[in-house]
Amino acid sequence: LDDPLSSRIRRRYITFEPDTGGWNNLRMSLENIIVLAAVSGRTLVLPPEQTMYLLDARKGDTRRGRQYTDFFNLTKNTEFLRRVPIISSLDFLALEGKAGGAVSLDGYNSTMVEHLWNVANNCEYRKKSTVFCEDLYDHYRRFGQLAEIIEEGPVTNCLVFDLDVFTHGEKFIHKLSNDIQRRISEFCGTRTPVYYSQSMHNATVWHFETMDFTYRLLLHYYALIFFTDPQIGNFYKRFVRDFLTYQDEVYCAAGKVVLALQFESHLRSTSGSKSPHDSSLSNSLDSELIGGFSSLHVRRGDLQFKEVKFDSLTW
Image (cartoon, rainbow, N blue to C red; front, side, top):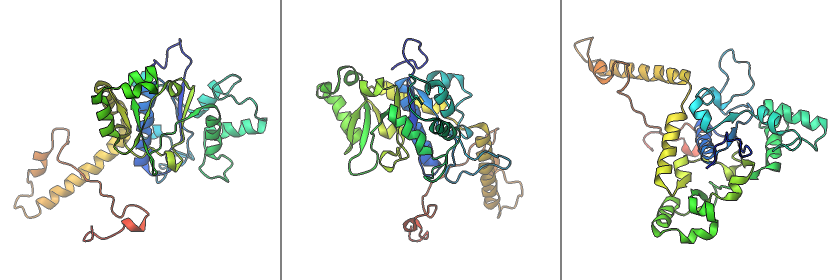
């Protein structure tokens, strides 16, 4: 909708709070935020480094927290950064924390200002912590517009992007064609549509309180966000596919695990073979040792909840 690097408009930001669950929850939530940053022309402000559930530091890493850039290749792809500029919480305060800035620190005493700088550097999700993450997010909420997209609860939402409704306001919703209204209804189901509006677009800071259970974004972006123009929807599916990629070392580690599983499968499949050099493994892989592997993610017994822990016969 707007070029985030254009000098003709004031830079606008999207801020968010990391989900408190495991990596899959963190990933889904981030994908939603990145798509929204791209489509709205906003600079993405990463949250401070902090502990991520079950993601411990690597050997020799002395940092107290983790960051999304430890896993995703977010800051090395210039084509991606041209579409979604990314800055840290510290950079955000340096740019916009001064007088007249989007999140001005004016009005706080020196102790509080120092505290917010410390939280922006590294925070903890513990109320008794001296660097409680919520203190910084409260500061964002004070200046920004809270995104009230509800994904859990008796009333949930889907987020709809339609150019005519965006241009003319909600009064145009009932003027949408029957086909568009039908497709919105099919996509949203029982959820209440929220239409992307001028108010959302013009807010200098658009904050997502995704650490709160009510506003968690625990579904894929293509199940939350609907574009009435299918070409735009397809564009952002390709956008995530092409740009939201893991760091090379993550792929390398995963590749080693997959290759080990393939080799074990090979040994099992040839255990009764007369030839110790059975070619079944080599036939299933290409020249780069890719292929011959698929997996199914079964959530049975891998969570901390007793009700999901039962034996394979019951399952």
